[in-house]
Structures are given as C-alpha cells and as structure tokens.
Length: 448
View 1 (cartoon, one colour):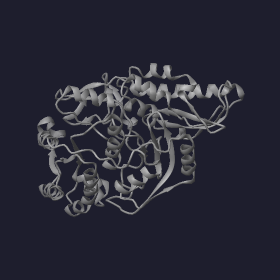
View 2 (cartoon, one colour):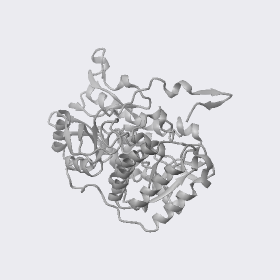
View 3 (tube, rainbow, N blue to C red):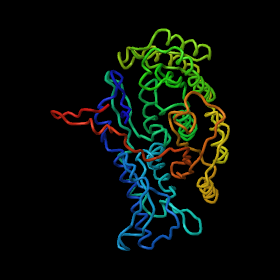
View 4 (cartoon, rainbow, N blue to C red):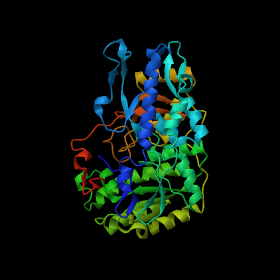
C-alpha cells in the first residue's frame, strides 16, 4: 500500500530491498518477544499462577491482516487454555517497539520491560512483566535488535535505519540509540518524525525529546505542490496538473503546520519536494507565503539529482541551526492524561473539544486507579487530516476529537490515545503490493 521509507530516485538508502523486507530481523525480534510475552501470560493463567481479571496485552504480526483484529483464543477444551477475547496489532504498534526505540541503553531497556503492565487482577492491581519473571527472556530476544543499523545513501552518506513505530498509531520516531550514535558521527544529525507536524513532530518533541533530553537546533517541514493541491480540493489523480487556485486554497494547511512548529520553538525550514510538473509560479507562491510567515524556504531536487539537488535545503538548515531556539512543550509533565489530550487537540489540531467514548472513560478510571493518569500521551490518528476524519482536508477548526480508547503503555512511558476510526492492525487494499513483488534472476523486484 505504501513504500518502505527507504526513499526513492537518487534520494535513497541502501540496501533498499533488505530494508523493505527482513533487514536485520529487528521487526521479527520484536514480534517474537511480544508474542512470547502473550504466551507466558496465557500459560500463567492456565497453570493457575496468576488470577487475572483482564488481559491488556495483545499479540502482533508484521502483516496487514484485518481478520486478526478481534479473535477468540483458547478454544477446544481446557487442555488448550482458557477461552479469551483477544486480537492482533501490527508489529509497529507493539509497546515493545516503543520500548526499544525509547530505551537509553540495555539497563534502561530492562527497567522499561519490567514495568510493562500486561493485565489487572480482580482487586484492580496491575500485573507486570517483572512479576511474570520473563524480563530476561525478552532482553535475550531484543539484545541484537537494540543495536542501531548503519546503512548508506546512494552517494555513500551514513544513515541509521532503526525502529519503526508508525506515527499514526505509535510515536513515530527512530530509536534514541540511533540518534545518539548519529550525533557522535557527524557535524549535523538529521532525524525523521513520521507524517505531519500534528503527529510525528508533536510526538518527537513531547515524547522523544522530553524523555531523552534532546534539543533540536532546527526543524524541516517537507511539503509539495501536489500535497497542497490535494488539501485545496483537487482529486488525487489530478494533483500533478497545474492548478494555481487550488494551490492557493491548500496553503492554509501549510500555514497550520508552520504555526504548530513555531509553537515548539526551533527555527523552521520549509523544504518542497520538487516535481517536474511544478510551475515556477507555484513555487513562487509557496516561497512568498513562507517569506510572509517568517520561515526559510528551499527547493529539494534530491530525488532527481541526489545530493547536488539538496544543497539549497542543506544550506538553509545550516543557517537555521546557527541560531537555535529553546524547545517548548505542548503540555506540562504533571498534567493529567485528559488535560494533555485537550491541550494537543487545541494547540496542535485547532479542535474545539475532546469527547471520550464510554470505553475510554472506563480506560481512564483504570489509569487513575493504577496511578498512570499523568503519563505523556501518544495520539493514534489519521495522517490525512488535523481531525480524526481523513476526509476533512485543509485546516479545519473547532471540531470534536472523538477518543475511542486510552491504552496504557507503562514500559514505553505513555498512554496511547486512539481517535476516530483509527486501527492498530491495518487491512490490505484491493491490490496489495504483494501482488507485484517477485524474484527474477535472483533479484527482488516490485519493491518501492
């Protein structure tokens, strides 16, 4: 359905095929560790070693499979366990993915694994990984996966590819370990926070930077004429065609992202991915808006020209980083979970209010009872809109953010807040990418 985030054209990291598929096995290690924990939980119940009222831990799989979202396990009699309503998430949404990406070394990884809450007893108290005694086994499975993966661009520049917590359903940042390594290996370290500023940037600043003590010197906001025309109401098949009026209409989306990033503090560079169909008038329009808003603007031709085509962006980033501004957070650390969600909704999404479902209110009561109602929040939301509705384009204001569930990730150190119809186990589209992948003459084809 989408590419593997290895880039494209001459702006690509290698080995692309390996990164898109098994790579160094990090995802498989997380999947195995996650499902080992699920098996240990079920076995402890079956053996009568723990009396759990509710299991909060779900299994994961790195395949989009909607049939596994909600299932019943333990069928077939007592020898096969206790019948339980369960389900699968995608591996990227596993709490172990977030734990690995946020852990500041092996000892911190152990501490985070220990404190994962996997369920509750009948008296309402938490059951943790430490109590189950399985922390050591999880560490053994994650030991190699904790090591950052060093790859290179087509032109030989160093890059780390480590971790994959998608920003629409998880915290959207690569590992702290990779970021710290990159800071030691170059004069400038550039990291990606997935999707828009309302998802990736918000979580990068409020979760990763806050937890790891990172201070970004500048921020790059990537856009394109195609994206802005789409937000201006042009259907996807038509976004490559010249349309100055739609571009003008879609600039409100760029304005909103710039306003978001200004609230966080660091200087902004708007980098536009250049397409051969872009008109000079379209680029001039965006450049003028950026000048009006007081942010730097640069055109990137990295796809077509590689490093040579990204020199303008690189210089703009260097200039922005020479005058670093202090980082500001969206909420106070001591705010309640609900207060944090409300501040994100108001300050980042421009929403009017937050509405918790009955299930979310029940989740909130559990968080309060367990003492986790002041953790940071990780909002799971569509990447297509500031709202929870993927069809609400542009820059809507005053809308309601419907919160469906509040999911405790005590090991990661945050609460996942699911909104709208977002799902943490995607389904396949009518024409899955799997239909075009093959091996010809020993080479993998069909990956993007």
